[in-house]
Image (cartoon, rainbow, N blue to C red):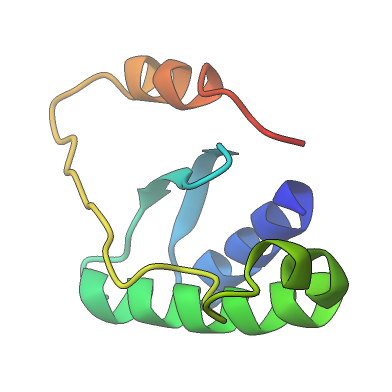
Length: 104
């Protein structure tokens, strides 16, 4: 599921003229390192990313998700965190994301 989500995120960032530099996830969240187009509003991009990825993941993994999300039918929470990293070495941020535990 995480690999499919990475593919979806990669395709969406390209459609928005952005670039996915790093991706990793844990059981309850994902980390994305993006190079965003300055013309793209982060909140609009995140909303689209969550909407499209939720629809596609539910389509591809509906039976698996039904076992976990039987109480409330949501894939993403409404919250998100955006941190800018201008001036920080990208290698440090990429290393942090790579080191996050993934739950395959």
